Image (spheres, rainbow, N blue to C red):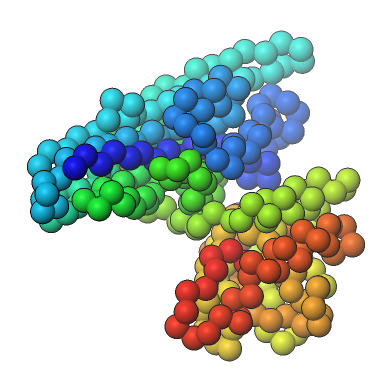
Length: 346
């Protein structure tokens, strides 16, 4: 039996992810933020179309196959011909004049597949840097860098003899945002935290996979489609939303307290707790706090910042209540019987 599958990561720069002096270049139009990629990739050809539309900075395309004997024993296996990096470009504008710089890709790193009874594991790292210089001081030799930092993702694809597959992103650069799509094209995983300052300070030389040092990715499951619709309302409601930044360990909401605010997670990972038990972890794109607004005005769970977080804050009168009710229907983790599987998004 032959099993073939694939996964894709797209790396892009969302609004509100850039800070400090680098943000000023975006704000005056020297560089641009990226429009969020598609919620679903219909096929691998869509990656090339998104590249042509300047919708990402680079993509990691991992395709693989395995032949299994009748008893499930792996007989042969390999990476697909489409596996590798797809580099985007960066357009810089001064007044009405623009220049486009192609990205510089580094060699694709494909680990030797790991073979187990009925299973073959594939791991691939791709990345590179923008062609636009980014001069900056750094805390490592040579202490001043001219080239932009390295961006990368490490993807892991597991093929099984029953034709099922697993996907993961065990490693990634701390910036920008990385979205991961599964074999059916569905957006499945997101990098949970961006760290622009750490990326600029450390992502070069030996502190990259090409120097034998990957960086463990903080990963969260993707939010629901209706949460993505609500997030558009929060970010484009005719006014700039309040942005709240909180450190790791901060309490965002506390179970039993009154609450009127609704939160959109822009960056970071939070835990959802009820009666002292952790029910889930949520990341960028998650909409939180709607149950208190729609129901009795009391928080049904405690939200704790697992990492530093950035939240967009909104009021219910600024949003579509029907969509908020749809989000609330998906959540209700607190109502899940003990031991049962709870929904992923909140």
